[in-house]
Amino acid sequence: MAVEEASGSASVVKDVASSMEVEAFRRLFPLQYIERYLDSAVRPDGRPLGRARPTDVVLGQVPTTDGSALVRLGNTTMLAGVKLELCVPSAETPDQGRIAIDFQMPPICSPHVRPGRPAEDACAINEQLSIVLASSQLLDLRQLSITSGKSAWVAYLDIYCLNADGSLLDAALLASAAALMDLQIPTVSINNDGKVQIVSSREKQDQPMVDAEEGQETKSKFVEGRSLKLGPVPVALTCMLHKKHLLADPTAEEEAVLQTVLVVVLDSPDKLISLYKPGGQVVATTSTVMDCIALTRLRLKEVHSILEEATQTHEED
Amino acid sequence: MINLEMSEQARVDGRTANQLRPTLCSRSLLERAHGSARWQQDNTIIMAAVYGPKPVSGKKEDPERATLEVLWKTKSGIAGNADKEAEVTIRRTLEYIVLSSMHPNTGISIILQVVNDDGAILACAINAACAALVDAGIPLTGLIVAVSVGVTTHGVVVVDPTKVEEKNFRAHVCLVFPNRPKCTVAGLPAPVGGEPAEHGIITCVTRGAMSVDEYMNCLERGRAASVKIAKFTRTSLEHCQRSYEIMS
Image (cartoon, rainbow over all chains, first blue to last red; front, top):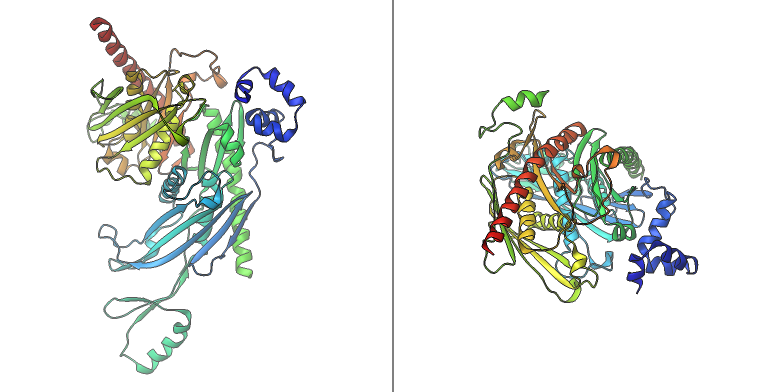
């Protein structure tokens, strides 16, 4: 019944709308509900069409990891952590480490995710993240090298979605970048045979003294711990296209109803890392693409200052 | 400017910057499938099979429309995240043309088997899937055309890159446009901002970093190349159609 009415004439819907409670109208005619907002250039949550939701970045939330970050984008929450392990670099790239990205959507994040096989969306976002990180110059893998050809770090970057309320790639990418910013590479000792060992901070204080006493007997070399030198941080912005409207940073409700999505990733105002538009009912014209890029440029500035602020507060603590 | 100079120069395989590889499309090769197509761009070959509309059960059943399902099979057969992503992209692209409301409560499966990958694989797969849908007689709003464009390290834009070129290039893009002088449904959106409807981007997937200007250049070249592929698709499909009519 409701379906037939929804696809029927707009006047019927208007009549129904005038005599119905807002919440009931929202459930029965989700598209018309959102369209009524869009026609007056505002979103159901009160935002203008082109503005992203308030964003929060907190670094170093998980003490068991080598670097972590918690990102909130409106209600969308992502927790990212990086764990470092020693590995032997591959023969083709002897002076590079590796990064392994795993994006997870546990059933806790959304009613649409069931336990078991990873959701299709999760796989797609995981792949997008890997491509974006590989295409941008955020992390130079040579920084993960310890001794060329012998040892390097492999960084396991795990991103957990705790609350999936739309624009998942934006939040996941921001969380990944923030976790890498927080990453501290531990001090290692390299002995004569080239064997690498991680030195905990307590041992580090003892070890040099032993070395000094025993003189030349132990010749293990220390490589001091450090944080990574990262390139420009890529920033993603999910845009929804609907009729002539352009919405930035949609919520899950908007994503479900409006369907045509376009994700732009920039790492500087003129450098396009990715432009991803997987089908949908609306085609993008050149001018729409330019509008999306312009919105992402604004967002880029915003996110960079948020990240800067987050690093400062983290250092003060 | 650079593109003009480049177009005089030959690429590794002797093509110019704007030259596509020889393209072949044959249909109805599989006996059991309701529709099938083989799309070949030189050494890149894709087989597509379409089954449906067929009954589906459980979560996949939609009382308002037919559900599309895309299965992507690589040569090695091991499915990774990249294959899942390709499935999602292709499914959402095809949803643009399939008139799914004509067959509610049913499912349409599109199986794409990579026979050989020599670059531009996603574009070939989308073209193959479109031809297979036509072969299966699935109601469509129109046709689509996919094209792959690469950006070299010098910022030169070339169409239809091979696997080696994709690897050496700074970036490459897969673009999908509508293939239409005509369309089966009324009330299509009018040209926006003076742009004809076939310039609208249905799907865009990029790999690698490029400047915004280079992307715009890619769009322009992609649109120009898509006209050639669109023409080829239509001729190929019409040719088959005529031979059917003669037989019956």
